[in-house]
Image 1 (cartoon, rainbow, N blue to C red):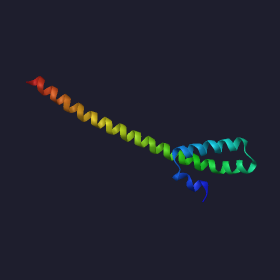
Image 2 (image 1 turned 90 degrees about the vertical axis):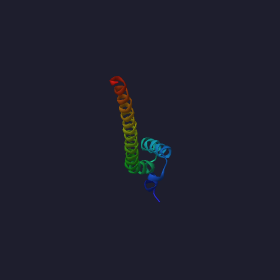
Image 3 (image 1 turned 90 degrees about the horizontal axis):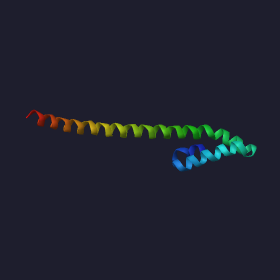
Length: 87
């Protein structure tokens, strides 16, 4: 099983460590290590991008949910205040 095939199962911390090690090896490893690191780096970058996009989508959804709750709460409070002012 290649390292690239294991990327989706790695934790964020493991993937970040691997990314750092890969970049380090590109700059200072043996020729074999540099070659392997150069070949692996696009797969790591793609997995990091997928995870970043997923996290951004979760944050956007959470924000939309919070805003929707505030609008409903704000409408109920505003509606109640208007009723009291009318009477």
